[in-house]
Length: 524
Image 1 (tube, helix red, strand yellow):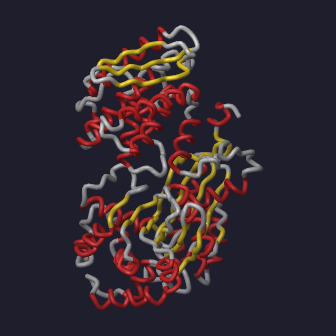
Image 2 (cartoon, one colour):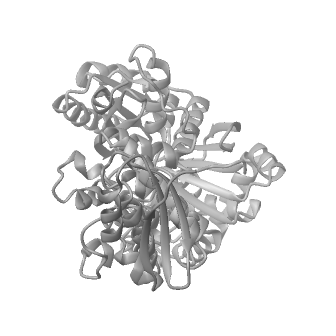
Image 3 (cartoon, helix red, strand yellow):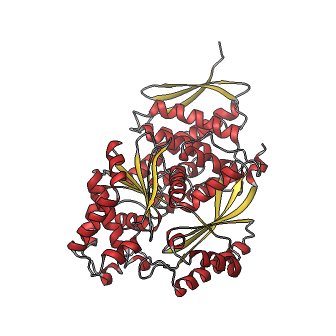
């Protein structure tokens, strides 16, 4: 399959999650390798259960929902969306007049809605989380706290052993258990008892599989994550995806937050205004799970039902769309790196050649530069991505690479990791890292040092393929007390590679305090 075909979308679709509190829409382009890229998003707070989940939707709630759908449909039409997926969840599927709303929505907004089961909703959320967050063999608890329901999934990178939707959403719990403001200890105890009685199966499995990590998705968990980040040194300016914090950090937030009344909660910068009255049951639920399962770590996934809907659509339609899925990359990190590479028509042979040499040089300097194995992976990705700026323009392509990396939806990475990859790629040529450079300046001192070391290595590796024709077939590294000797075996005359390596090796010389030397050797 040609790179040009990969760079053109196969289809543009929209996925709409019709939740109890809000309607979320995302418009994406699906590419021929099965990846997708976000084109636009829209979130409409509708509060279908303003007085708790009753057996019927009020006329006012239905009108809010219809108006929101009309705005979403207008956005879809303006972006020439070819197919709309719209799934109704807890509030609509439980209401006696939910069918009336679905029918009215179809006739008045043109959006055809499908009411899905809670179990299907949980499974698709699990698929979305697994797509966007790095999982391993450790079993984790994934939770999506909505207004009407909470989806619980226990699983790892290979399978789900449990997934279900339970009627524990924050709007439902607030209406049923919370009457005072601030919430009282008696109301908190009543909530905890209800959670204990309802979650017996989840508790049994979580303890059996020794679950120590919670991964939370959707608004309530994202708000909690953002508030924790705001109180700690955790970086969450660009993205909440892969945001990770200790359970003790959450407990510190909980201790302060649970005492606040509505007026005080409104002052919380990271808390959405329309969640102010219903957030507390979610806080109590997370605290209950942390204590009951002795949770050590909490992570946030920005992917939720909408992304699960898209993944489900891609799997169902892969033959009709003639998709060549990137299923060989089960790791979200490597998969999303290659998705970006393919979209940017990357110079594959050159980039892989440079990455190979960069890792070889890294291994030689790992101890001397006090680098970690995790840095090796980031260097590999920066090396693969270093020339994607050509997609915009040759001129300043190193700066374009930084922009593309920072502003792409790279899954599975923490924000600091994305910033390291972007800066290392940016400094593969031209200026050395300087504090006056805005994106370099944003990094903590320890990360700036890391970028200096990794970019110095990348510069040398890039110089070794200055011709972009992979002339250097073999590299040997001989580090002496006063020199770094690079012994190269080439296909043909190596003048360009020697010149490029020595020119780009100044940063490595400065960091190591050793002179860089390049010698061509004959293969035996």
